[in-house]
Length: 433
Image (cartoon, rainbow, N blue to C red; front, side, top):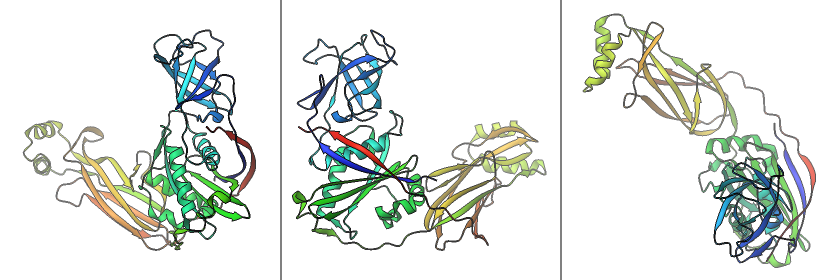
């Protein structure tokens, strides 16, 4: 069970000063400072240090363009390298393309853009936390939710934080917006409740194929705004990021409510056992076998020839799969599968191919358009554990897929709530124009 890691962030904005890194126009310019393997010249796959880090607006997975150090106009790139490790003032990059050997050459990347210099440091710190556990090449799908005031309202200041978060996050090429493709049931959970319900939220994210959801809260305390950013990650650690900024620039925004709070009913989690029940049929006579061939091969003489040559005596379902809300379940090792579902509606699709055997020897399976597929909507209105039996029958003129759904008598063990961990993060420094 994962726990939300709460990080208290003390942020300061400063003008980055370093020997080689310099922002000119829309680029941040730095240098390869050394090879990890102490090579004089590097090829594809080699790794090197650069003097660009998070202070320069660089994150893990960014792609740097490499120019020869003598190409002061940066007109002819000689390669690219990907950031695989990141620190405050340096990084490790791996050469991924090149058209000549690479040494202590110049590297560049587009400058990270932002509209609000007070909000940017904490949002960029959140971005670095989102990408940190993922491999550099992984595209990360993120849903940016709302940022609520202490009464759970959305205000003009909330909307400003959300716009700034979207701008900072999605200018990075490895970040992909989930758009609006998310379960509305998630909106019943306020950011302050994420620690208690993170397991449920992660189940929604898995269903919607989203890696991370970010959201936040704020409240005004004197001349400061206390901000809390939340990151719930279906794959990795969950984090709460706390900071504060000056309240005066946002005095009018924080009190102007644009969407008043309206409580939503939370869906509950149930345990669902999916049981696969295949039907294996041995043909009793040649006439029955011919009838099956005639039914399955209508107007397809090639398929008819294939099945008549097969000399099968058993028909059975093969390649049986179930998709629940788009997530595939296979039954290669067992005919039972357990998963959590929430109350509400779920789409279930079962499919299989009709397979033909001679005794225990597999001969052939029918492909499209003979694949059997059936979809049903499951509505769970009570928090009782359920069983879904799915019968797969390959015989002609039968109901090929039958769903049987019933409730269990007893409930499964309840989910243990995670424990909140706290640690203090060192000051995050970044740059400004």
